[in-house]
Amino acid sequence: MQQQGGGDASQRIARISAHLNPHKPQMEGRCNLETANCRAKGGAPGFKVAILGAAGGIGQPLSLLMKMNPLVSVLHLYDVANTPGVTSDISHMDTSAVVRGFLGPQQLENALTGMDLVIIPAGVPRKPGMTRDDLFNINAGIVKTLCEGISKSCPKAIVNIISNPVNSTVPIAAEVFKKSGTYDPRRLLGVTMLDVVRANTFVAEVLGLDPREVDVPVVGGHAGVTILPLLSQMKPPCSFTSEETSYLTSRIQNGGTEVVEAKAGAGSATLSMAYAAVKFADACLRGLRGDADVIKCAFVPSVVTELPFFASKVRLGRNGIEEIYPLGLLNEFERVGLEMAKKELAGSIEKGISFAMK
Image 1 (cartoon, rainbow, N blue to C red):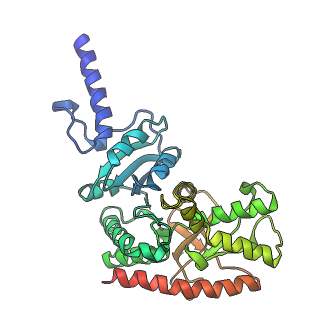
Image 2: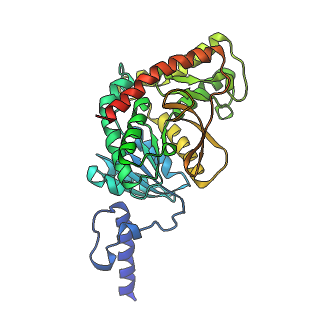
Image 3: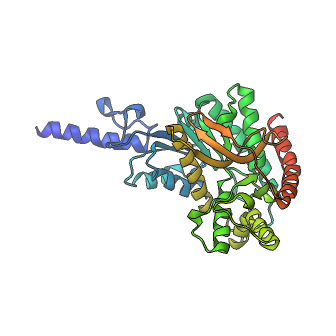
């Protein structure tokens, strides 16, 4: 009896160890458990989610919050450095998602295989004096490489792109998927949720409301003047003076710069971005589950305007984007803003397409 108990203990230890180090052989013989057979005791059914860039400034809080999401059954954390520590830390949380870590390009395929949702916050952050375009050369290459991995390992996954500049990285991803023959415009979404989160917060401050009761659609893109909050369509309905409209629009457009300057060289918006990304990821998972009326704003392949990509309200479902909504009635301020946004967006989109086609 004692010998049997020791064997059971060894198996339990091996199972736990296989969770934390899925690519390393743990013990000889029957205790060497394969990753595929290694499931968390009590793990809930749900979706498999990968975070690419999980050890970064956005990636760490994003990983933490996704571990807390009850819709996630398996959470894969990938980065080129520091993933083991982040994985070990987050795996100790007593929520049902199984956490596995993957380190370096040689493990990218394993990180992505079988995933339902892939979230990409990978890249370098913006620093004071830096525009989103300054990030382009580094982050564009990172996104291209990661999307090549997705096209090989999980071409049916929903892809949420956070890496800036989103106005260019989403077109890059589209071109990579087209080249590999795996492109599905319904499954590619640029995350602009932080613009909505900021709009809701800043408008609520002016009106003296709970931000959770405010919903401001934000269309266009995800940088500067391409960010266009439609205050005329907010809920609950409210009218603003021209001065209030101008102030709120400017603050929403420059929210990222506000954080960069406040951090004085120590980084950009990471915590609020992670929060917004998780709100959007949760909406994607609820759509995959089949929930009705899951509607969020995102930067997506679109025919809403003459541009091939544009941020607007989309309805999410089992196939990703089920419906893209028109812009609706705009006031004069918004119509002028829309033309400015489109002009700026056109150049950013072309920049991304050109990079991908090199």
